[in-house]
Amino acid sequence: MGLIGRRGFVAGTAAAMLATTGASAGRGADPAAGRGGGPGVGGADPGTDPGLADARAEPRAPRASEFRGMWVATIANRDWPSRTGLEPEVQRAELLAHLDRAVARRLNVVVLQVRPSADALWPSPHEPWAQCLTGVQGRDPGWDPLGTAVEEAHARGLELHAWFNPYRVANHTDPTRLSADHPARRHPEWTVPYAGKLHYNPGLPEVRRFVQDAMLDAVGRYALDAVHWDDYFYPYPVAGQAFPDDEAYARHGGDFPDRAAWRRNNVDLLVSETAARIKEINPQVAFGISPFGVWRHATTDPKGSDTRGVQSYDDLHADTRKWVREGWIDYVVPQLYWHIGFAGADYATLVPWWDAVVRDTGVALHIGEALYKAGDPAQPAPWQDPKELSRHLTLAERYPGVGGHCWFAAKEVTTDPIGAMAAVVADHYPTSVRPPG
Image 1 (tube, rainbow, N blue to C red):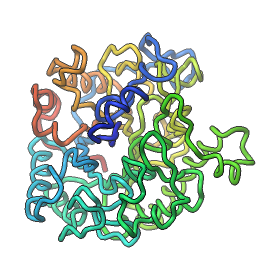
Image 2 (cartoon, one colour):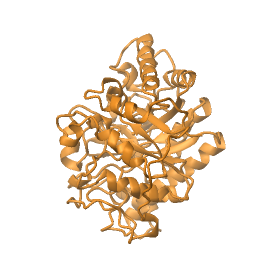
Image 3 (cartoon, rainbow, N blue to C red):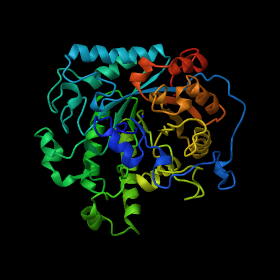
Image 4 (spheres, rainbow, N blue to C red):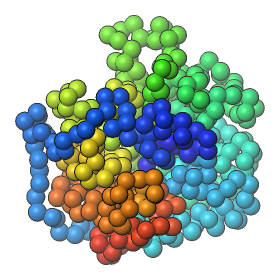
């Protein structure tokens, strides 16, 4: 799908996130504002690596299937439910309205956030009921939102991808505000506070096993089409604040050349182990990840992109390119939340870079699109043009690895303040199609 909550989405904290990490409002970090910021030139350099050669071709013919997704964020009630404490029938009606809107927009995949903050939108034996439902974490909402979402999505010909956040515990640092039986209260040694939030410590093997168990419970219960993660692994860095994992590193990091390599290995293990366990439970369930859109810069690594600012490999300890090349995931949805021509991370630079990354891997590529920016007065001029996102799809059609797009997020799919989504549908979604098989 952010980056606050997808990417944070918490009143009072979004401004701080923007100021300290360069995160875009709502979902993602602006690489031009992050570490190493500066103007980008645009266009992949084919001389740096054979896999980065520009693969432009004539626009392709319409496909019989493509990924047309929509994220539905539940953190802080960003998209759904519209507020906490609604009666079950009202929550259900709102959910079904989102599904119906997806059908009306000729979408075919709904990516529903079902574990927003180490709590659950289903009756989990591992974690409490999600606070976003009733306003009180752990309180039974009186119905099964995930079970209903799966059933009703399938009844409409939609796939349901269950979106989990592995390590976020809370958008605050006070454990006493969690439900009394929350695992983070029973195991305070599993958690670390950082940048005003509470996180599970990715460096602890017991944490890695627990979060897998918590997420995979849903895979065994429901006919999910996919498990989906966003870009929150190690948190986005905040200037002047060190992530407090000294003790875990002292216990478990001895075999690594430095802390960064150890952290990347922790995340690699989470990804590879989860991939294997999903296939053990149900080989038909796909595993997809929606990472921050920049892996590394060409100035840092010749295999990187011609970009500036935040790098997932170095700043989030997420080696997203490796996960694709190793085939640990079935699809990748890089969050390319920048306009065509943006200096720090040009959409026209990153689409061909990702197209080259997935080439010959068997991993599907879908592009994450910042619908939430369209018409936002805080965004620059390209985002005030209703055709900007339609131009994204026209550009992406030139790259054979691009199998579709995913829209952040459901609220804007419905409200569509300047008609950007309507333009995409008119220009690129003339008929309904099935999702990729």
